[in-house]
Each structure stands twice: as C-alpha cells, then as structure tokens.
Amino acid sequence: MTSKQTPQAGESKDYTIVNKAVEAKDFTVNKAGEYMDFTVNKAVEAKDFTVNTAGEYKDFTVNKAVEAKDFTVNKAVEAKDLTVNKAGEYKDFTVNKAGEAMDFTVNKAVEAKDFTVNKAGEYKDFTVNKAVEAKDFTVNKAGEAKDLTVNKAVEAKDFTVNKAGEAKDFTVNKAGEAKDYTMNIGNAN
Image 1 (tube, rainbow, N blue to C red):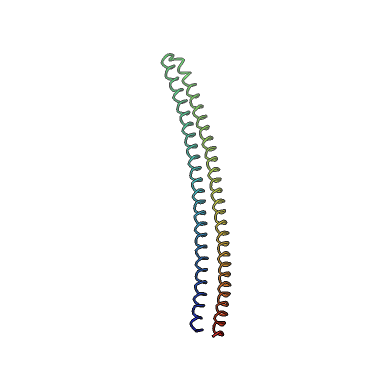
Image 2: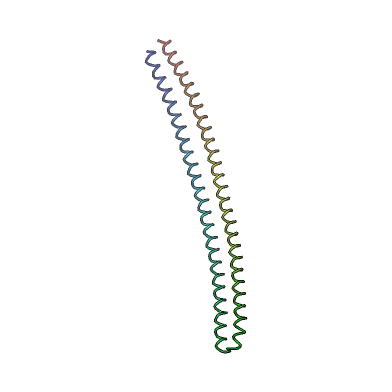
C-alpha cells in the first residue's frame, strides 16, 4: 500500500513544480512583451518627432531662399524696366542715367545676393541646430527607453527567481507532508 501512495505524492510534487514554473514563465513573458512594446512605441515617437521637425525646418529654409530670390529678381526687373523707359524718352539723359541705373542695379543685385547668402546661412545654421536638438532628443529618449526596459527585465527576472523559490519551498513542504502522511498510513496498517 505504501508503494502505491508514494507515486501520488511524487506526482503532486511534479504537478506543483510544473504549475509554478509555468506561471512564473508566463508572467515573465507577458512583462517582457509589455516592456518591448513600450520601448518600440517610444522609439517610434522619437523618430516621428525628429522626421517632422527636420521637415518643418527644411521647408522653412526653402521658402526663405525662394523669397530672397524673388526679391532679387523683382528688383533687377524693376531697374531694367526703368532704364528701358527712360532711354526711350531721353536719349542723351539716358546714357548718363543708364550708367547710374546699371550701377544701382548691380549694387542692388549684390545687396540682394549678399542678403540671400546671409539669410540662407542663418537658416542653414538654424536648421542644423534644430536637427541636432531633434537627434539629441531622440538619443535621450531611446536611452531612457533602453534603461527602463533593462530595469523592468531585471525586475521580471527577480520576480521569476523569487516565485521559483517559493514554488520549490511549497513543493518541498507538500512532499514532506505527503511523505509523513504516507508514513502514517503505512504505520497504521
């Protein structure tokens, strides 16, 4: 009779160990999945922020360069039109004024070119600074997400180890109780 009862105690011990191990494994897998999803979402947010910011500053720079070019072209066309009209009305006067207008046009074109170059440099620097800020933000957020994931993985590992220890202790206690019970039944017979 004792030999029949001993396998049942062993089966109970195996069943308890397996159940506790499965519970601990399932918990760890679920937590790791949650932290992985969190990390991926934060990385996607940081990437989207960087892409959107860089696009905004690129468009801003292009618009300002187009405005400066249009300004330069309009001033050159105005000066040319002025020169042509005056030349038709005052031939002798126009020769002198044409020189002045040409100088004026050249000066304005140089000023407009310098203005455009300066503004383009400013906008380039601005865009570069914003891109660096966006990159730094992305790197910081990715680092934070990595650190959080590592911390949560360590917590999940510690939890699993703790639960496995509890399952072992529980199993040892139950096996001891089953042994004592079996021994008592065997002694009673």
